[in-house]
Image 1 (cartoon, rainbow, N blue to C red):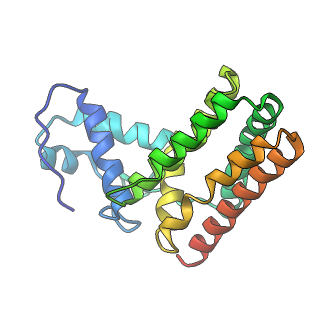
Image 2 (image 1 turned 120 degrees about the vertical axis):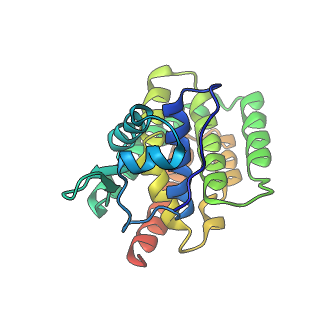
Length: 220
């Protein structure tokens, strides 16, 4: 594992450490057999231990890392039941957003959704992080457009957890390009103006993601 020296003061050092460790996890540079020790990381990055400790504790809180019996931290191993719970929570929030959008069937919002999908799915440098960010921004736009801050907070709570990154990273073992799915079909369901059709389209889409995830876990 080769981590870069950090000298920039434009961001909080703890944030930079967090981002660098997350990127290393997503790229596979940090794997399940690696143990992260704050003293070693601080020496490698040539910074004090405090921002490293803050980043490691944040990654633990986000569900990416867990403490190791040998000291330090290791990657958290998510259970199949936890994966199921995460996707059930997504379905509850996002299918409700779909019902609201279908009841509105607003031409401006529908065009905005199509434009977002076209922009985000045009990935020039495919990577786990690029696919994850594009997928999250597409799904977040559906929820943003209903203008309900509580549902948006719930969405962010689900998607911003580091555990979601880890899950998405595992999909690479199957076929990462499948992870984006057919988002245009979701807009078409909303454009019918039928709340039931829109709800079912979202549930089916999220179920497909769940099935893909379970396939990835099985191949681990």
